Image 1 (cartoon, rainbow, N blue to C red):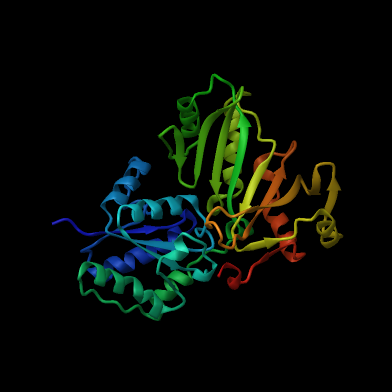
Image 2 (image 1 turned 135 degrees about the vertical axis):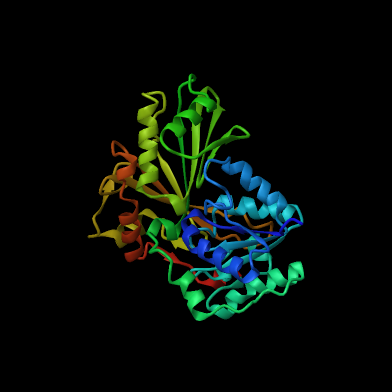
Length: 350
């Protein structure tokens, strides 16, 4: 008899913490259920096709917990996994961890019944739902120590991980560069990636080639939870590896989480940022080695007639600077300290 499969959808930045939770759940169930965690090296043995294994696990799962943290709350990959499971009739349960509150979560996930984990009693809900779903009688109690293993094991988040949902960019590419050529080049740089329906998929990142008019472009998306200097240095290396056949992006777009508000009017921005190291530039505002501007767009997650929170876009123009050296985190620190960015109250989403 095959073990029932429970899928933990999560951001890669939370992998270490959720590996601890997976171990705890397996111990309480006597290893009689399968807990799928795509990042742990056990659910997917190293060397296997990562995308194919995730797709198979999604098809086999009977229950999914969507582990929502400040890193994963707007992860496109986590939303895809949750949507795939929900469309198959799998029970999908949002679980807010690491200080996130479900009141900060927008539709569609906020429409599902879930819970916040702020202590061992709330963590016990995970095993209680497993018991109810599969008709089992596993131990449901979590000790204070077990809870602290998870909550205390959290890494210190950078401003990017806490406030940036994703980064997108567009860059011109030579006609000689096919999706297969791009895939092999990315692999030579040490990334575990696959081509899936014409899109290169790697943990926390995707690349695709598109044709817009007469322009051939590489469009890239990087999840905020993995958006650190090493990720951007990878883009520098990819451009160098393709030897002039891939242009450096002229603009990077950072989309912030829905719970982040901002001042975007230029005259108010400059008033708040006087003396902070931010200066006026021809194309916007200059901070250290980058030029930036700010904008807002309406959220696409709300239906007609519903209140639509504005989503903040931070537009960055790298100029001659290497992408891996851009001062994103220091810029976000300044914008937060000067109250150009702030966290919206939970009532804003209700």
